[in-house]
Image (cartoon, rainbow over all chains, first blue to last red; front, side, top):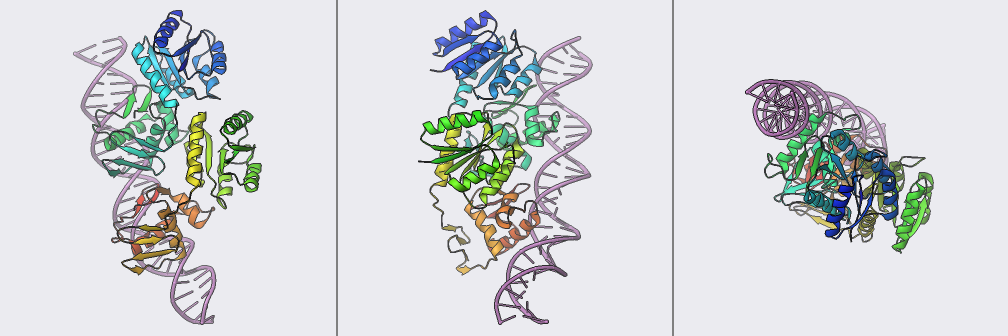
Length: 224
Length: 224
DNA sequence: GCTGGGCGTTAAGGATTCGTCAAGACCGGC
DNA sequence: GCCGGTCTTGACGAATCCTTAACGCCCAGC
């Protein structure tokens, strides 16, 4: 049974999540502030964490940092509408995904399932396959319809970062720094150009992306 | 019993790995810096090495170089998230795989199993055949249209590295260091000259290569 | 309805890298 | 010392890639 820890200070949300998650066969525990949340993670080693960014005692990103030093437990962040900088900071700190309040329970459950599935078994082979193309990380090779797809170095690096974090949202800053180096943080024009080129080479309908998704204001995500 | 050496300077990681690996029936030994790590590898000849790139006394890639001169022991690298250039350097130096910290124990174990499995049986295909020529790795012989092709020592080494990694892209740094030695890393002019010579001797149309492909900006690939 | 910001798309230049050739350096055998 | 073969080095046009700017689109906010 999958164990989930919910960290939130609003009793109504705690109750709603407990009911819905328990009904889906999750084992739920709760905490209402960052301090007890961190303690609970260390004590219970949950399979996933749902974390509200607005806590009474500390900033949510501090909780993430406190966890990421020693654990890779998937963390899904809840945040109020419009706090964009907060979400970006949380993702940069190592959160796996985020949901905006007020949220639909179905969406949250879907993202939770995805996060848990992603974390569970590590893929042995460095080959990622989709319905339209395959990416061989070790051989640095991309195949589509049986034919090789030619990628430039920059295109390849960008694709590699996204594919290695399949399903996970990567912020623009993270992508820029991984591909172009630590001194690049805001030249998001590069990203738009190269994501467009990747889509043109990989997507069946480049104008309606299915794999290389953009999360407006946040970053990009490779959806396998 | 498979023997694993862990080189890391963080006691908590050493402890965690020792516990988990021992529980899986691995025989574990540890070292906390590069110098003693290299000594331990030479002394114990482990079946695999788990190496943290952030060591107190030397860069992790230097450790890899120090090992790769005389041993093919699989090396799995641990690195912090986002240090892409570091990972590339480690893979270029000869690491077999890498895991990003914080890591899931399951993932690390899976990659360790894969690395050991890859290393254990070395069923080197002694003869590689293409439509236009054949390469006998054991006899160090190349035949084309029934006649032997004369290769100089350097040409042969270069061809051997590429053929042994059939289908895989090999970075120019890797090729240079495998053929010319560890101190050569950026003299890519050598590569251009010798790849051209190989193409002239092996390709049906040297100006339109079919087997010895170049991936601009990255390296070369032998396409069977 | 207008405006501004973020995103997608395209194209052109300038910079980098690659292929090719050839001449000189090096080295072992005779 | 001579000589054949091999390796290094430099230079150049050609191919490729990166950068940058401009423009259109969509959507939110006023």
